[in-house]
Image 1 (cartoon, one colour):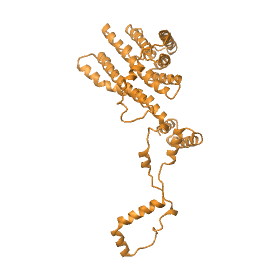
Image 2 (cartoon, helix red, strand yellow):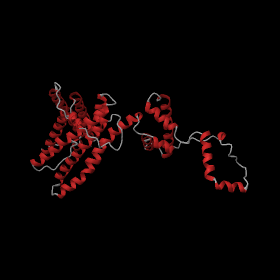
Image 3 (tube, rainbow, N blue to C red):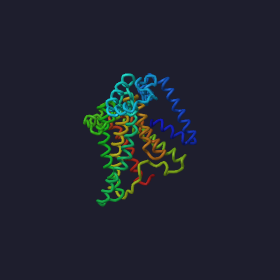
Image 4 (cartoon, helix red, strand yellow):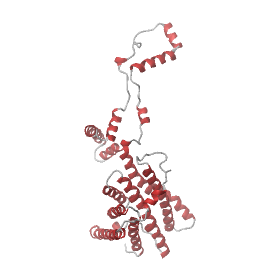
Amino acid sequence: MIFYLFILLILSNFFSPLIAFILWIVTGFGIYKIAENYGEEVPWIKQVLENVQNIGFTSTSPDTAPEAIVAGVDEPEEGKAADLDNYAEKFDEWRVTKDTIAPTFVSAGEKITSFSFNTPGLYKVRLWMFLLLVPVLVWILIWDIATLPFQFWCLMLGLSQSDAYIFSSIMGLFLSYFIIIRLYSHCTNNRNLPINSEILSDFDYYTVRHLFRLPRESGTIKLTFKALFLDFLIGWTLYILAIFYVLETASVQSSIGSFLISDHFTLLKTLIYLAVCVPIVEELLFRGFVLDLASEAYGFWTAIIISSFLFGLIHLNPYGVLNAFLGGLIYGYVRVRTNSLLPSIFLHSMWNAHTVLLEFMDFW
């Protein structure tokens, strides 16, 4: 239904409301017929078709109405008075008779009540809800909104605006870390990806050991430094091309925010935030949670592309989006090859650290 409403929203941007509504109805009918003709072999499509076909009520046909109910026949006054005395009994008898000759009455409300979002047919719907909504939860609700009380608290302690922002963001990252670990544990221990009230109550310490394991595969160090060279080569090539073709330095600056850096101690705090805390949480989210969850239903290359695409979307400008997407492909490949987040965290940290140092030297 959300996807179908989204189609209406898109059509409304290109056509008048009446034309968009007509096209919306026609599109829905076309989707239904295509699903009916070609989707019978897919379990979740077949389940959706059955749900659509069974929406509504079952009613009694006029041909099967009880013979005792005869319209247009007047009863004597004394008969009516007698019926008023035993109305409840007569009604029970009528209901029993109706149930024997007519199918059970099933309302749409009962169908909705018995509907379960955690059925196997809706597995991929739940999968994409996790893939899309968890990054939104972390970045908007936690990193942007939940950090405001922390920032106010830091200002009350007398910290400067920039220091309050850095410390509150680090607190938000700590909170994000524990939420991501719990969601990862829930999805790992419940492979059907159920959405229930216990979704944030699951914590498995083994997942932490698995994600942050020390890679023991041969060639890990060599692979990591090759990836580091490729990451810097792609990043700087994109930056130089953007400078020549966009001709606006501000539009191609690093997506890492600029900070008012006045001394080395402030630089150190900025490095701790952007080159240590941010890479840990971002890699845990995109190369850990998103990549591993997507690989449950798709191949590892598709999972790497999905995680890199979502990673790129959280950056603010075109240069940042493209650079993060290509860098995400490198980090994701290293994560799959080494089966650990530590190499990808190192790569991410090196890129962020050198960007902060260049900002400190007023290079940008």
